[in-house]
Length: 103
Image 1 (cartoon, one colour):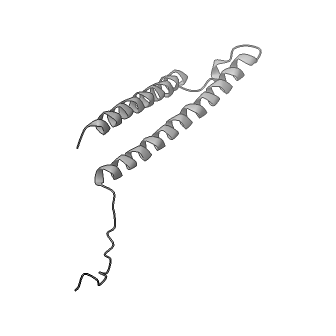
Image 2 (image 1 turned 90 degrees about the horizontal axis):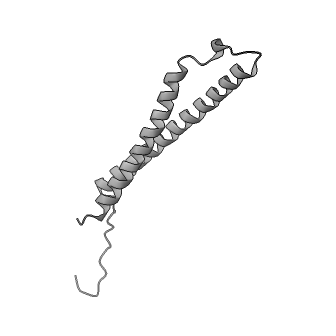
Image 3 (image 1 turned 30 degrees about the vertical axis):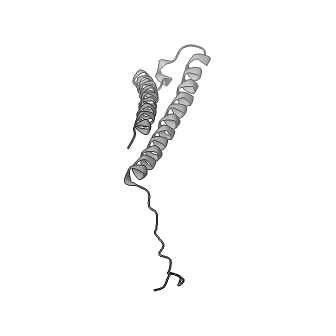
């Protein structure tokens, strides 16, 4: 084959490195976790506020109309939100510290 003849182009497909794919999947999983826990907290807060308003707006205080296990639900909702924020902070710090390291 001479230098003037054109070679057929071989197309190389570029694929993402495994670390990049894992980072993308981890970010998607973290985004879904954020969405689920924030939705849980939002809906719990609406139900709790409506129950409290219903209990206090009547002629007297009626504890039978309170949410069952209201204190445990309050702890679970606020703890899940706190752990979610802590997880987001840890993942963000981990991502930026690993990004700066030379390969």
